[in-house]
Image 1 (tube, rainbow, N blue to C red):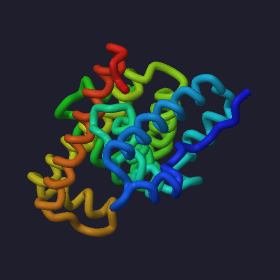
Image 2: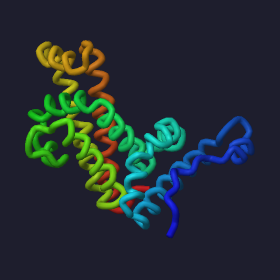
Image 3: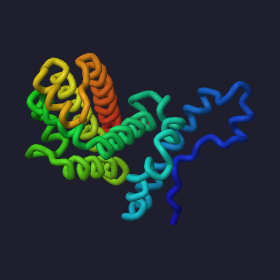
Image 4: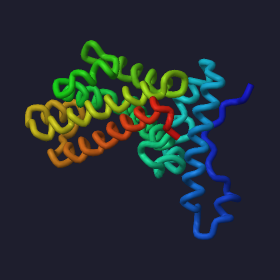
Length: 215
């Protein structure tokens, strides 16, 4: 049975062979190949310890390594979708209370998205972390389109919450208490835009995955 491997980056030899650095086409090819290989290997070896390694890939290898491989890929491609999924997962695990608060602020804007994520009640810190673990592992062991849809909903709800806080002094004050520092309306608006783009990209990728065209 094949051993779990982290996504393989370009070897130094291949990089040195390309004058002026890594050829964009070669880097794009490596991004798609590595994402497909990670997905394939995990599905073929979906033992608990393998799934756990996939969940903790960022902790083991660093977000920078994945960024070098996948962050430049098209948003609605497999490497682009996995990159955004790992970034979202990392943010939730690191700043859970912040995400939970933004999520709560956004729930009234689009309640249907809350049920898509999997919450029937206001999330707790523990349930946010467990849910994002389940979404990430589900992308590799379950229905990829469902996992990407759920992740997209998390990002969009947090985006709506950030936009609401940008417009509401009361919400900003509550958020400042959570974060231990204030955020300006401009900062919150910029965050909302970033999160909305992430959510839309994940949702588009989910549609492609459901159609069997995500690559």
